[in-house]
Length: 462
Image 1 (cartoon, one colour):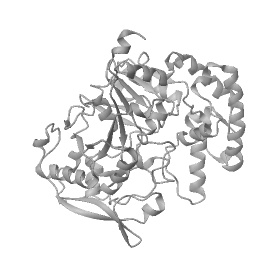
Image 2 (cartoon, helix red, strand yellow; image 1 turned 180 degrees about the vertical axis):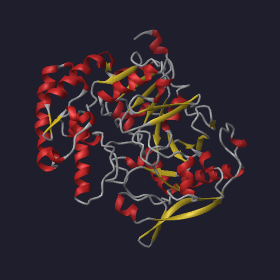
Image 3 (cartoon, rainbow, N blue to C red; image 1 turned 90 degrees about the vertical axis):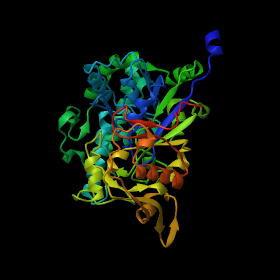
Image 4 (cartoon, helix red, strand yellow; image 1 turned 135 degrees about the vertical axis):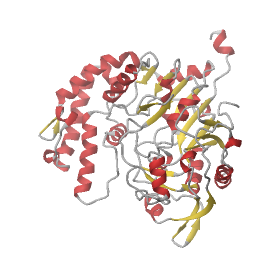
């Protein structure tokens, strides 16, 4: 062991997770925290995630590459828990490089990542269309193949990044996968009668995904990403021992977690903080602080129960104010987000399953100008009062929120960087959130801009 490594103080590591249904503003906070971290890690999800960063007034949307890529000198890692569309990754790299961001020398991709291939997206779309045709409620997936790719992983048949290094092995496994999935597409889902246009037209014939175009594209992409393939687990552990501070960046939100979310209206991976360990290949003892990113109100994209949902399409309502002032459209899909009051009982569940150390409240400024705010502190469920979100969509759909009313504020909080300079009622609102949830507010975001942030406690401080 070298003297420098043996004498180095291990780094301090922070996990950033969304505590609601995603879209809480994690990207900005990850980017902001990389002033201290020198490595940023994605550990779950795929390109169904989306982070929008605003730096010096310029918007940048990221879907796969960790948000730390916008900071020169920061290494970015895609861990084994991510399902990877190489096509979308290369599109993202090209966009960043066009903007003058150096990516390839700083991006490391786990060889153990399962690949998202064209038949995964085809299955995703076909299943949602079949549900709609049968009159059943759609899950509201992004149609990008995330769920089917995770299914292949769990069934132990996935093609992984490392398979791209072995063309013959890749071809054999691809043929087996096409046999399985084309049978489902053509026999059960009626893919022959569906219109396959756009990029999918290249791969589909008579409703079935063709071997040769999928294989040819994969081999062409393999040569490009080969230099970025890595043993990410080993690199992260070595960086930690050498004193590097790491930041683990969650995608989606806790209430979309496959186990702890509003099942079945969830994503296909574990979004909770504990999965940073499994999804990146580090021990749980390396996760020192968990920061829960929490919007000052609630939003949700897609189907599923939402106890505090408001009428958000009607002008003059609080929900419309949140939707319009907050620009509530998804980074990845552009779908409108449903809006509602802050749900502290929901946040209690998130705090419980994530082991939150502190909260970052985002979009506080969106509430500027609302004369009255409501805070959900529990629910009436089947004649009983409960103070924490129940498990599963069916019970949550029957929950009637119990609200506390608080006065709003008319002064602007946009761009405020000192807590004492926030409107007094905004301070009281944050303090009530702390009291009801039992989790301290450590960071407050007052606009999408990187610098418009109030730091009450630094997650990287011991």
